[in-house]
Amino acid sequence: MKEENKVAIITGGSRGIGAEIVKQLADNNYKVVLNYNKSEKEAKEIQEQLLKLGKEIKIFRADISNKKEVKELIQFTMNNFKKIDILINNAGISQEGLFNEITDEMWNKIININLNSVFYCTREVLPYMINQKQGCIINISSIWGETGSSYEVAYSTTKSAINGLTKALAKEVGPSNIRVNAIAPGIIDTDMNKNLNKKEIEEIKSQIPLCRIGKTSDIAKCVKWLIEDEYTTGQIISINGGWYI
Ligand code: NAP
Image 1 (cartoon, helix red, strand yellow):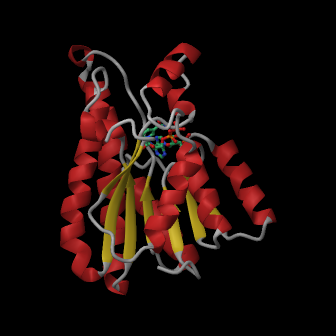
Image 2 (image 1 turned 90 degrees about the vertical axis):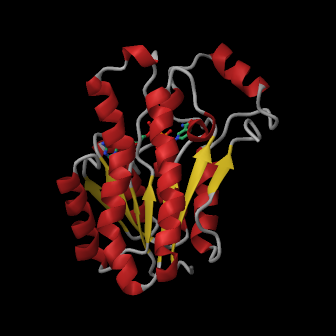
């Protein structure tokens, strides 16, 4: 898929991995819609920075666990750019604690934000992609969706489900020339891991064959590659420094 005039939506593009994907795609002249929820200041700063470089970027606030707001995000994109070629389902939260201490409220919250959002966003963009017989959907999953993480059962559940959705949907929409893939990062240096202290980070690094935690650019580079590729679909691509092989 060539970048000229291609339109990409990135959910949770205000911080961390999503912000790096926004910058990577804008740098490569994709037209970008950055979705954010709470981090308006960060979203505006990224927009300002990229506009100064002559890039095409719009920002839109939507809680992607709310299907009405997702509809508005997709409508905003269509109104501004007239098409949608790429959807990056990136937004997500983590949650830690013993399984027996997960309340209904906690469970529903993480299922809504991490999993239902992927369903809502994908369901809204697919008719446009099917109509134009072309599209690329990338879901940001996690190493814990593959291996499971104790103390993060709900989070692991959402990411495993995203992997299943990715494979099944790839089969269903492949004939419409729509590719659906997931990236499963290991540990990446973002706010999501700011609760880990130095000692814990060192311990994790000692288990990783490439001896470092990941950078947001490690994930953004793979996103760019997956968009430009033409024959990869239904894959869960692990980017974890060899932590899980
Ligand atoms: P992060 O730095 O905490 O950023 C999370 C992003 O998600 C923010 O931009 C946030 O936007 C957005 N978001 C959260 N809830 C939202 C909602 N309801 N509606 C819209 N946006 C929402 O996290 P990250 O590390 O970049 O994580 C990005 C993705 O990578 C997540 O799916 C995560 O599970 C996955 N991942 C991360 C790691 C890691 O080690 N960091 C590893 C594996 C997988 P606002 O701030 O604007 O609300």
